Length: 124
Image (cartoon, rainbow, N blue to C red):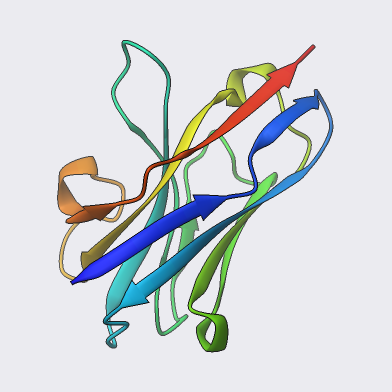
């Protein structure tokens, strides 16, 4: 069983930065994947970034490459999403999800566990 809790969201201006945290409890076995997704009302949950818990892989969607970075602190059981140069189109509820390695890290349906989300609002 895995539980995830997001934090760090807020309201910022375009160009500002935020760092989101995903606190993970439960199994943190080798090969486990933690991903960040975002969702706006009426839209499908959209892939942002994902990393393997062992740290050998870290990937982000083209829409955020060069601005967002995913990282993890194994000792703290926390995965971070550093978001720089935020844009209004980044406004969404951000969720972290957990899954076993072996599928598409960018696929919403690949993930077995989700947190409650944290809101990010970027104004012009």
